Image: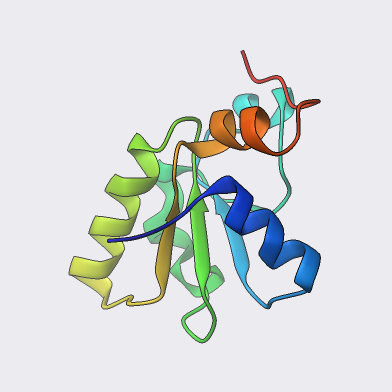
Length: 105
């Protein structure tokens, strides 16, 4: 499975590299903190496959990285996605490594 560090993701953003960011946390979690992107909760992802692009890199993230790994494995195995990238450490790592104003605890 491909992974991207929070620092690498921020470099993509700074450079304007085309990608999609998908947050698979629950809405109440996204209300606490967010790094942008499309909110598609893990339990609803199959119902929203048309929203997950196949033509550009798609970075999937959750709180710590566990749910995003499960989502990537399911989408790759069952639906043929080959462009998915896990945000290593999730939004917690992004807050720690990149944006210290993000507090998800």
